[in-house]
Amino acid sequence: MTHRLPRTVLPAATVALVLGLAAPATASPAPPATPAGHTLPAGTRFYVDPDSDAAHQAVTDLKNHDLAGAAAMAKLASWPEATWFTGGTPAEVKAQVAKLMRDAGRTGTVPTLVAYNIPLRDCSLYSAGGAQSDAEYQAWIKAFAQGIGNGKAVVVLEPDGLANLPSDCGPASDPTGVLTAGRIADLNTAVDALEGHPGTSVYLDAGNSHWKSVGDIAQRLLQAGVARTQGFSLNVSNNLATDLNTHYGTWVSHCLWFATKGPDWANGHAESCAGQYYSSAAPNDGQPGNAVDPDDPSTWHWTDQWFQQNVGTPPTGQLTHFVVDTSRNGRGAWTPPPGKYTGDPQIWCNAPDRGIGARPTADTGVPLVDAYLWVKTVGQSDGQCNRSIPGGTVDPEYGVVDPAAGAWWPQQAQSLVRNAVPALTFNLNLH
Image (cartoon, rainbow, N blue to C red; front, side):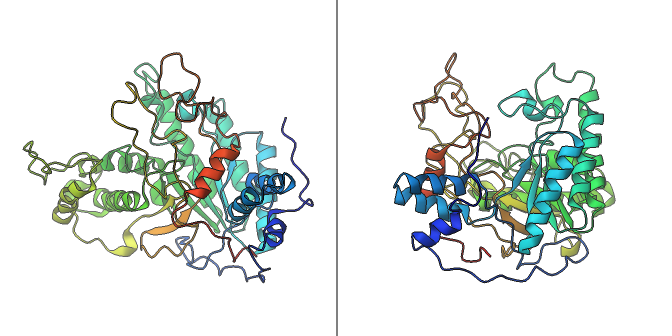
């Protein structure tokens, strides 16, 4: 069992002051009421947890006379991150969510919550777990929604839940389709429960730009009820560059419009959309650059061309918005040296030498992007990665057995701060 230091012992803000990193900030008013559609005002201030892993690490480092480490962790602790809810009884999660809402309310800020308890979570891999049945999950998510009440909140709904359906887990994982149908029903129940609260902005998770094709994820989003939400989330717990996810997300948004409000022949046919793997607008003749390559954005103009030809310029007010997780994508994706690994190098898993990306903000300057958020907790492990080496337990990128998924990893936190792009500074709008 992990024991935390009391909050009264040198919180990170105090550590920052001791180290001369910041001056006390004055309280700011709560953001204005959200207009219809739940779009976040550009001036939204997100909740900062004073009891975060980084805050405690700052205290530990200061006690150990590691002033550089304490300074780095104090900077990290000053920025807002999402709070994950991964289990418990309905009564427990309702109380936990309600407490977070009260804490955020006292500071006039908006918390970001992650609901991560779907049955067969993560295909029973590193982040295995979740509710034991659809009925158990539906009771849990309804209680989660009740805990939010009438306050303002952002909810990222079930990371990987749509990009990794039970039918995707393996050839024998869902032979009848019953589990996948249950997953879709669970997400629809969650959408309705959460959207029943007027201050809640719900984003159904849609994976990332290097996972499902545009048409595939758009079709899944429609089945899960995205039309009744504020939109979708991208890049959760991943490190793909923001511009790639923004480009991909814009395609997904246009594809959703195309399949629901576009020409009659497109109604219900999101699968027809071009994407990051294929575009019928390209020559596709085998010549370099004449086909869409997900790893070569210079070829993505072929998909842009397909959307220009088939979708045009939809009314902005009819397009679905999205948010992007920028907690670890400052340096973009990790590419291991050619030939280093014969199997899957697990480029998503505790990728080495990555850095924090854009700071959390609702003022993105991109019309369809409601916010950049730190959804993945910076410094928490993805799991015990072994780069698919048979029988291996040590991660060859670090020379150690990685901590379990969700466990705090100080060395990784320090590396992410050290490699941040832009360089990490103290959040002067902390209070």
